[in-house]
Length: 348
Image: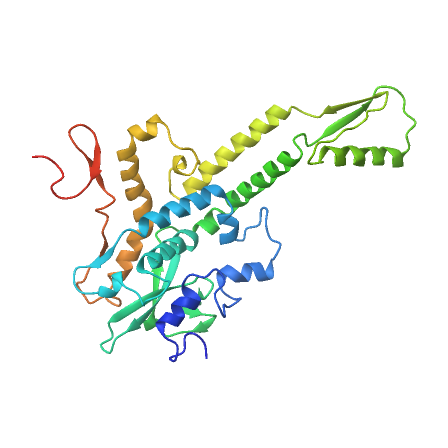
């Protein structure tokens, strides 16, 4: 019997599947695990989607996911009638806020998410838990499989994203480009001058073995964490090859451009993931930036959830599910100050 058996409660399902990075009894045939099984060393320019681990190792991606998760988890879900389960879950580690944050992450990474729901005797949804992407897949008929096996579709809600592809597929080259840059920068921090030329100024009778030994000694001395001392014999000259400053500037520029590309894939302003504390332009345009983040970024991944939960197979006909964005929205008063968009906060 598995965690989907009738003897297992929704709380067990939540604990074992809803949010762990390595869920129990995961199927190797699911989209997010099959790649790593068949191509464990895939990388570089491969056409396979990136993995969550690859993406989250990039600082700009981690920052963007943190912004999306932190803000969207604070948007309450409500319905025009009933549906109390939207703001509640079984007691335990998986709160309603965590359920929303995890679902938004799935929509970003995979452009789809799946919820497992329990229903009462009348067939109405009583509770819901997000299913980890490692657990589910889609068959040729469009049905959702759990651990590669058929499952009662009435107890599953498939939430489709609005973009043609998820970030792990659409941004795979940029993610790996960023990872390569991080590795290159790490290498340069260990060896600031990647190539060093030892030039002969006079004829030298050194053998191939002596030359190789001299190269190894020089390289080891340069990597010494406490600093190294080398002796340059008469007739030799040691000098870096290429302009170090130009190479460093190229890496800095490439890293900034890559960060912008990642932000574009994630539909978020690059200024929000650049790691800086802000500048005067950002403070001056704070209201506009906040509004753009809500309308162009956050709603791209929250509205599909609300729209799917408004379908008749989830909530009764005529019931509309919405996110409450009121605590996030802001207005300006006559002096240009920012304030929370609530009733009565504008002087008459």
